[in-house]
Amino acid sequence: MSEDTTVKRKGSFKSKRNGVILIIAIIIIAFALKQFTSKKLYNGKIAQNIYIEDVNISNLTKQDALDTINAKYPVKNLNLSYDNKEYTIEAKDVDLSYNTKQLVDDAYNLTRKKSYFSNIITYISTKFGGHDYIIEAYYNEDKLDEQIGQVSKQINKDYVDATISVSSGITVKESQSGLKCDDEANKKSIKKAYKEKNYKTIALKVDVIQPRVKTEDVQSIDTVLGSYSTTFNAGQYERSYNIALALSRCSGTVIMPGETFSYNDATGPRIVSNGFKYASVIVAGDYQDAPGGGVCQGSTTLFNAVLLSGLDITQVRNHSKTPAYVSRGRDAMVNDGDSDFKFTNNFDHPVYISTYAGAGRASAQIYGSSKDKVGVSIKTTTFTYSGLPGAKTYRTITKDGKSETTQIYTAVYRD
Image 1 (cartoon, rainbow, N blue to C red):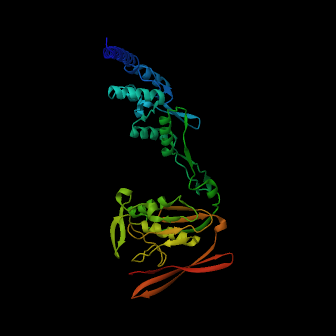
Image 2: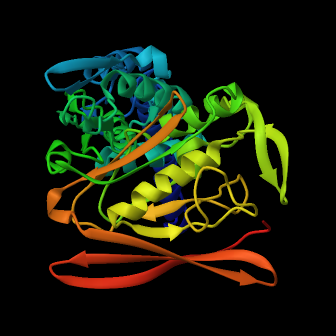
Image 3: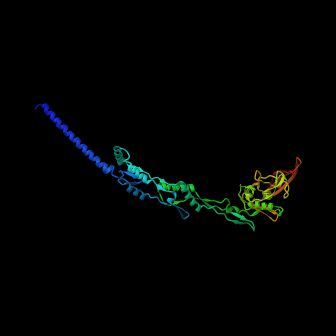
């Protein structure tokens, strides 16, 4: 046998042996892949090292994983509390839910949604690197607002201003603070609880609303600062009714230091739907019937009481015709347009309006603190302007021995 033949036989044997090894290796790899595929990759369970929040759902079926997550993070009703009382927002009333089923589906499909070899790579990467999911809360925003509003209605309370009555001496009715739920802040707390799946009772944020006029404010009111009265024909029922209605809407008002009182705001528009009746009014220098006839006598009566109290007159004007119930320069015309009677409390303490009309007499008193009481004198001078009668009104205020005179207004009348 030649040397070449021996080499060829040895090479052939080696090739066959390598082929056998390759086939065996392929068989082993195929078997291993089959085993891996059936027992690890496509075994009906979630891959390894996968978490939803802090729950390890590795090697669980979808249903087992869902049950485990729902047991750890169930949808619950949320309790709110204020002043030792509890209020509940039920999950069903706001359509509260968590996306746990979707997350379990996503976790299950993580190593199944791509090609076979891509899924193997994902499996290996997940096994050693892990994969985390965060649960999200879903709810109906409008329904949540409605539930928060219903809770707020049970807690909210209007504040009550202190008032006084002067029928028989000066009596103080105490003020009461109010309550107002901070719906926006409470909603943020609720949404945070849903997001974090934290169902501890939430302490509601409720603001205490202080009254505009407190008890200690009106306790300083102890005297009459100014008063005035006018007369009217009680037989004119509609006009008498309007005077009484307008003044009744002013009576009982407390004006704090720095605040401005508006007669028009207090009485409201002179229309039938606001309670006023048709009666004679001056329009463009002539008399005609309109809703609210007589309210100017109310404003005039109040104006003179304010004038005598020393309060700051901030808006006043005269009628086009001289009214019968007061002298020139002492009237205060109002309408629903640009004419209003306003005054500002320039004192250090609150003032109180007391007004009344009945039996042919309209009266107004301004009550306040004796510490604010000043001496007041009124002077009216008459003049003629283009043949028309006019008057200038001056007020002198004396306080601490010092007097100061100011002009209140200049009035010109058609007659």
